[in-house]
Length: 276
Image 1 (cartoon, rainbow, N blue to C red):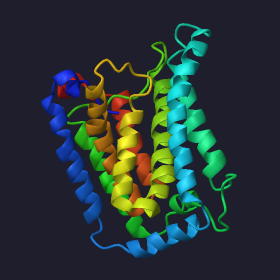
Image 2: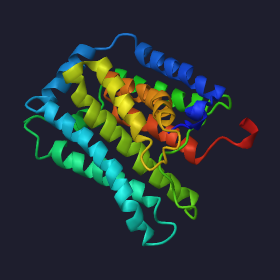
Image 3: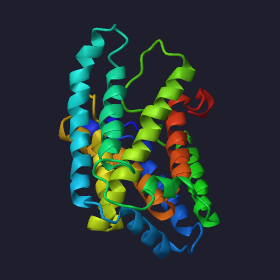
C-alpha cells in the first residue's frame, strides 16, 4: 500500500518516518473516540458468533491461503500473458480473488463448510451497526487517509499493477474491489478475528500486520532481499495496525471499508503536483 523502496537497499526517505506518527495519531483517535465503550459486551457477542469453530484450524487454513496466493499469482501471470500484453497485471487480482476471498469464504464464511456455529455469523454483526458509539470509527477512518495526503508523508502505492490502458474509473473500481474490500474481509474480518481468541487482541493485530506487510510483496521482484521484507513490514505492516485496531475496537465493517477505500483512492487519485 505504501512506497517501501526508500527503505530498501539501505536507503531512507524521511517522508516514510513521518508515516509512523500518523499511524500513532490514528490509533490514539481510535482509543479515545469515545473514551469508554462497552468493549466487554462486544467481545462477548463476537465470542458467541465464533462459538463452536475450530479457530486454530481455520487460522491455519487462512495462512495457507496467503501462501497459495503467492504461488497462484506466479502461475497465473504467464497464463494471462497468453491473452495479451496488457493482461498479466490482472493475474494479481485474479489470484487474490480466488485465494483471499472465494476459498476463505467457502471454508470459513458464515455458510462455509467448516462452520459449526448456530448463531448469526460475524459479518452480519459488523455490517448491521446499531450502536452509536461504533460509528465513532468513521472519524479515524477518515482522518488517516487525510494525513497520508500531506506532501511530507510517504504517498500510497497500490500492490499489484493495472494495465496501462485502463480508464481511471475502471482502475478505481478494480482497485477498490481487489485491494480495499478483499484486504478488509480477509485480513481483518476473517484472519485477525480468529487469531484474537488464540493469542489475544494485541498479538493478533501485530501478527496480522506482519502477514499483511509480507503479502504486499506478492508479484513484486525481491531485488532488495531482506531489505524488501523488512521494508514491507515496517511500512505496509505498520499501516495495518490502524486497520487492525479499528476493526478490533468497533467491529464496524463500513468504517473499515471507508479507511481502506480512502487510502486506495489516494493511490488511484494522488494529490496534485501543487501539494507535492
